[in-house]
Image 1: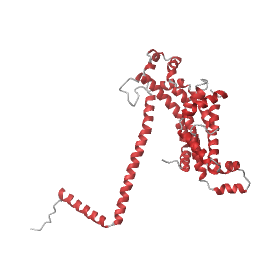
Image 2 (image 1 turned 60 degrees about the vertical axis):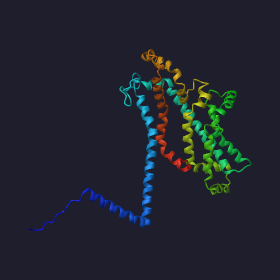
Image 3 (image 1 turned 120 degrees about the horizontal axis):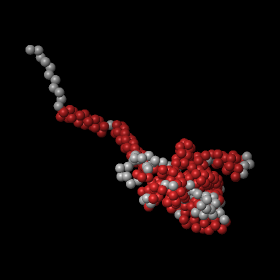
Image 4 (image 1 turned 90 degrees about the vertical axis):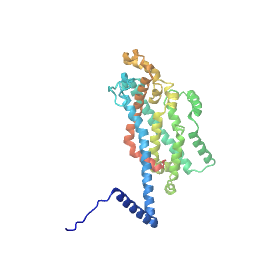
Length: 344
């Protein structure tokens, strides 16, 4: 008989034992080699940071995107389906009735034009006044400048309601109530919405610009204002873009000052944010004006689900212009954030 070589397949137990032996030898080599220890520690740290970053970004995306998706899904739901428990995400009946009701309740196009006008010019005045004040705090040293800067920072901490009543009395005596001039005056004098934050940003930005640029302009005989206008502002593009975007968005979403000084005293000058806060009070009249008798007859305005449905749709209509604007200025906004150091 010829000898035949018999090959036995390794059992699962033997394969596992072999793996453990190999792993043990690898760990023994790792313990003896400090370079490999550092490489392994670096890889573990990198993996941990990657996982933490993924969890944080995924969580933030969920928190931000989920309400928007939910709002859009609810906005296209027919008013008759508000009590239908079977409708959760996808509407059973697609309808733009909610948008028609919300648009009429907001007086949308008139309020939109007024809001754009108010936010645009208030932003220009905010940028002009806060950049000038920020430059003064960054470059000019005068008695009490630190105390004045502390007072500017206190305007960030003090609640707006604390200053609103004296401002209301002043604007009433000046005859500015019910007019956008009240907001323009506040913005032009450095007392607009969150002006203290903008002054701080400009101060920190101008302090980072080399003094040699100003000294060269002074040698050429330029005045302080000319140096600010021709030298400092062109180099502050990142800060200007950041402040302008924040100022525009905050003014757009403001309902407190706009309602107190403008829309509350002049119903002929509606503002989107203020109309959104008072939408519920005129909802019954809006339905009657639109001729939606089937909803009025059911007294649907007493249904909190219907009220939240219209408020939700109106909120989307107020927010949509800002989202569209952000798509066009996203790159400039990111550059401005990086240049001004607003991180974290």
